[in-house]
Length: 358
Image 1: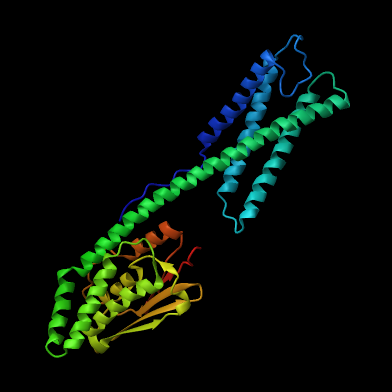
Image 2 (image 1 turned 180 degrees about the horizontal axis):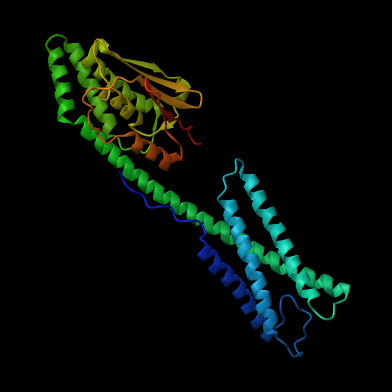
């Protein structure tokens, strides 16, 4: 089993601190330069021939206040972007409205605090203009934070998808290799050839059918696809089941209850075949204890594979196509869980069926 690196954290605290510092300081550096060399954005009434006075104390104060605003906005948006909403529009609504409320509240509090700290209160018109200018400035910061957060989240998601796709490809390579190794295993080949030898002299047609089924199993094992339809997976599985039934006779039975409406649904290659192989490998199959393997589609939609637990006295070693591998592959590809139920008498595995173009 491949060990995967832990996913990087979306917008770490260190990144938020650096971004907040860069945005607030960068803005006020530009503001200060514009105050020296030209009319500023927020004070267009300043005339060219007037001497400009830059209050560095006020610049530092506003830089600190804007740093706090940007920092809080980044924290809020990081939280919102990592929450799973059932409807996308709800996430957008929470992000925009929440950011607007936070910006308005912090901007108003800071502006009023600065105004009331002055010894002489400005007249109402001047106060309204200062509040308006502060809101314009702070909502500009909000837009910058929203755009940056969206950009960084998009890059983060793309990076995660790329990492997960590589991990899935690696898992699929391992699964196909282990499946092929299982089919090429001397024990499997010996049993297959021994069964073929036993019927080739008595029933040539049955022997020909057996060879066709064996080639179908090997063909399914050698396919190189990331996903397959249920119909494609069933072709290989039914061929494998036919081989096993020829070997075990009436001691092994399969109950397929597959709704045709799910034929186009997707699952991982060799997932169903691996479950059938495990059921045969780990359970006693004899005249006294025949084995029934049920393969049924459900309305979830999902595929349920179940069998009674009839453990062998000498437990066989696994071939690498284990349930942990299967669960990890489903998590990597679709972020879906494989359900495993063992009540002591029945062993059951439920594979999610993925709707095409979902």
